[in-house]
Length: 158
Image 1 (spheres, helix red, strand yellow):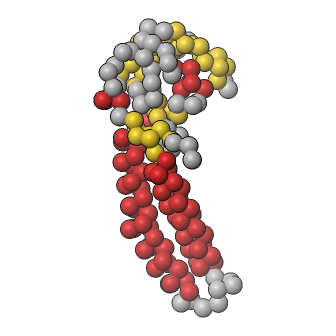
Image 2 (image 1 turned 120 degrees about the vertical axis):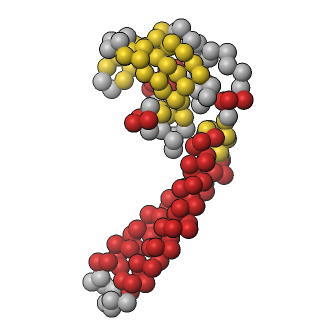
Image 3 (image 1 turned 180 degrees about the vertical axis):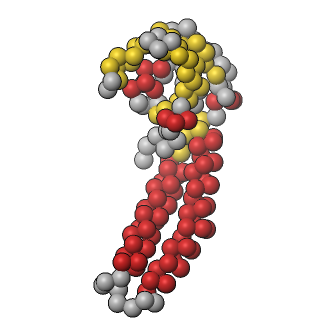
C-alpha cells in the first residue's frame, strides 16, 4: 500500500466530502430508493434504477475517500524551512516566457488537482518539471500543445 502525498487543506477537503456523503447524500438516496420502491414494479421503474445507480456512485466514492485517507501522507509545507526549492505542496510563481504572463501554481496530490485553481498534480508534466528546481531556474516543459518555457520567479511554502 503506497502512501499518497496530500496537503493539509486537501485532507480537510476529503474529510468534509466524506462527511457530506455519509450524513447528507446517503440518507437522501436511501429515501429516494424507498420512494421509488413504493411505486410498484421495479423492472420498469426508471426512478428506482437511477437511485440505485446514484447509490453505487456514492458508495464507491466513500470507499475511494476512505482509501485515500488511510494512505495519506500529510505534508505541511508551512513547517518546512523555505530554501527556494520547489517541493510538493509549494506554490511556484513562474513567468511564461512565450506569453510573458506571471502564473502561480501549487503542486498538490492527484485528488486535489484543479487547473481552474492553478493547483496541479505534482506528477503531471509541468509538476515533474518544476519539482526540485530552485528559484531563478529556467524550466522547459514538453506539453501536449508543444514545448513551454518558464522562469521560476518565487517559491513559497504557504
